[in-house]
Length: 154
Image (cartoon, rainbow, N blue to C red; front, side, top):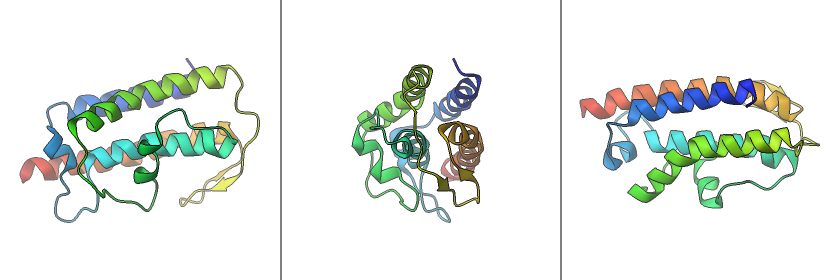
């Protein structure tokens, strides 16, 4: 497995361990002072990776569309996610990276539509996107940790 993708997968595995004691209501909870929830952040990680790597490369996403649009940047949770949707997001956190690694090894990413992230990072290749993902994952890991503390205080 590509070492960068393996590193992202380890971060996501850590996040799954971090939230394993939370129920569906807690994962959907938006604490005071926040505009999203834990499960939205997890879904956003999947959506962002699919968008930055597949869509910007002119390829089709490898997950269901219902896990893309509601989790794009500038969105917030619009509905309560069921236990089944939560389980699928948890599963996709890891399986989508396995699929991505396979597609990367099979050289599917031949072109890339350059993109300037909101953080000022210019992405010109899928390699740039892969290098950017750990920063993005870490940012949302911090949000998830803060959200968990707030949810458990409630």
